[in-house]
Amino acid sequence: MSLGSLLFMLTAWICVLGLTVWCFGKLMQTPQEEKLPPPGTSL
Amino acid sequence: MTDTARPRDQWGSRIGLILAMAGNAVGLGNFLRFPNQLTQNGGGTFMIPYFIAFVLVGIPLMWIEWGVGRHGGQYGEGSTPGMFDRLWHNPVAKYLGVLGLFLPLVVLIYYCYIESWTLAWTFFSVTGTTRGLDQAGMRQFLASYQDLSNGTVHGFWTPFLFFFITIFVNFWVVSRGLSAGIERLAKIGMPILFLFAAILVIRVLTLDARPELVDGIATGRMVGPWQGLDWMYSPDWSALRRPSVWLAAAGQIFFTLSVGTGSLVAYASYLKKKDDIVLSGLATAATNETAEVVLGGSLAIPAIVTFFGVTGAVAIAKGGTFDLGFVAMPLVFNQLPGGAVMTMLAGVMWFGLLFFAGITSSVAMATPVLSFLEEHFGWSRRRSAWTMGSVAMLLGLCHIVWYTGGFLAEWDYWAGTFGLVVLALVETILFMWVLGPDNAWRELHEGASIRIPRVFKFIMTYVTPLFLLVMMAWWIKQEALPTLFYHGVPESQHATRTASRLVMIGILVLQLFLIRAAWRRKTLRTPTAGANT
Image (cartoon, rainbow over the protein chains, first blue to last red):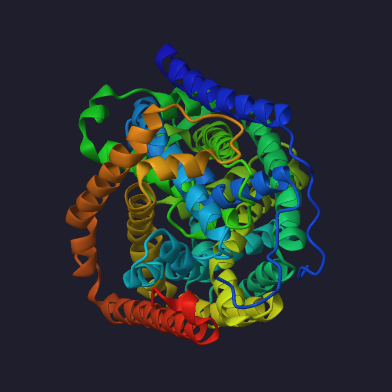
């Protein structure tokens, strides 16, 4: 694999994976209560 | 506001919401359209306009749609006619909202037909029907499925059968409600999708290099998956000077995030006022990008280059996304080491992941119309779902019967491509300009887990709508006018394509009447609520 292709691919992967990991890390730091559906909903 | 006293559904958990939202965004395009766009628009350099469009259009639109949806949901509105009416106190607003009913319904119907192909090919993978076919045989296999008059391979009823099953499964899921139906599907389907994709990526990237053949003659070069990735990401700097590449990147970002379909706003309407939308929206977009760039980009093209060489991959990529997914990939699976079992497993995983990617998107597209019927006509979820399912099934038959006449292509262009940009533009203007940038900013930050960098206020107010306007203008010039006048379309398809447009117009007019009827009903029941009619 040429260096140019490798750089583009790795940069793209690092960007999206980095953003995803950061987002889910933040989500886990700010947990929200698990909410149960209200009674009477059409489930 | 809803006429019924019935409480609205709610998301059961935050992770369920994010998975459902991501499931809505992750679709067939992540695995089929993205690698094709990458190879045809400058290779690695395509990622530069792609990420710029992600920041300037994708993320802002994601937040705007979540904001519009949650804002409408506070008034009990789960579809755009009511949401727009709440954002803009003008009698026209609710009629503009017809786009958020029309587009998801139209796209849902033909999308379910394509989704049914993935179900059919999953079945064919299990039964081994495509095993041993060469390229011509595989093309004939697909052509016979798409064309009812071509009975060389499939029986007349085969496409109908898989379509009926797909429609049934979709509307069974949505009939069970938000939490027990859609959210549960996302919690099961999304992990399976990621698992199948990850297994396939590992298998593809560990394939051995093989001698490259061009027209049966050895070139003396060895090709493998890494040569495929090399070809895909090989930078072509001159591509950055072509406006078409920038618009292709913006278009890819737009379609991959499922913005402008009316489904994100419908999902977001089930949030509470203080539920976070900033971080959740960003997480949804990021999850979709991982599925697209890391998984979608590492599957089809590297596998195809390994078995067909770069020259063969170029020809297949030019054949379009369906050739890539339904002709080339089964051929690759036929040649995988491991015999019939590996061929079957790879086929089931590939078409299974496409099916899950499809169904998590199609159930989202069903939601706006269901919410509209429930909230404005007091229908139960079951009644709305099965009525809409019947309509979708009947209209879907047109796509099966006249697919080769271009019936689906018309819907895909006018609703699935052009219409989405129009709806996204309307939403952006209503949220950022009519509600106002300050109010919109406050609305987005209600209950937010993180703060949006202030520069995005400027981007969302000026840059995103400008970007969308430029996209629209370019498409009108380059594609809409030629498509409208059937340039390059065989004359034999003109009648079918005209009929296809008339059916779309019929749906649009019917939905406008439904909106009028809904607001009249509301005025009769609560005279003050109908002040905007």
